[in-house]
Image 1: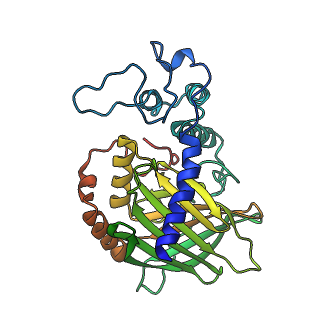
Image 2: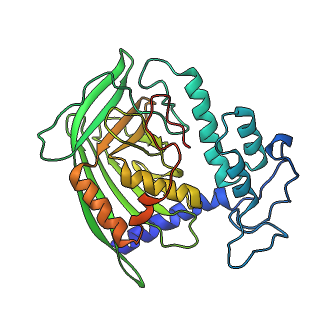
Length: 336
């Protein structure tokens, strides 16, 4: 049963992500995207080699979209991002560019409410500001705090919960058992439970470095979870989060899969965030379009779980990779 379940999850995520990554690249390139004309895109995978490009030595050729994204990913010019989306609108990088574009627009229009940056649908929002002190639990387990939007209260409502971290062994047909990081989140006063399973991706046909399962359980008389825009990492409960580069897709009611980007720069930065930051932020949009943010603490148990998992995957050195602008700030949740 476990093997069938994970095989089904992988199949669903592969189909959904493949629908984005596998489409033909279209539209004309804006003049300010690059100083020289770009070659015509390949008709195959968006991560495949450029037509006519040669691979020096054993280096893997990069796609045109990947090279163009490297040139514009740090921009703060919305027009440049719009031009990139128009040129590469059917690629995985266009999804990231749209998220970046929305973040720039949200930062310009941000208000005092902690939920002003949280759209009903769209990119990952910022965490609530430090308008309230941290809420303690019994001290025996890491904390979870659910910030629910409340029209009558600009700072929202807070519900305290707890997190139980552990490693789990996943069985895969034809391969040795695979270690995964697992968390059980319980917010009893809100009646919300969440199970998280974080594992590396071993399917070469899936354009993701790691896969995260999010399974929400909400009482029948409560509004269910309709959308999860993404996942952020932050250094403490009151800090603003930095989004992980990836794509979240809804599989069934309350069940979501998040595939993290397998682009080298994104992969290194994601691993550094996962290993070094102490809190997760998971933005939520309920079925009634009310919004929330679930903050989840690693604590010592979570830190040990992630160290164990990454060591088993041979990725524990990712934290030593150089990173740019990795400091938490109060100006928003934009990436590098």
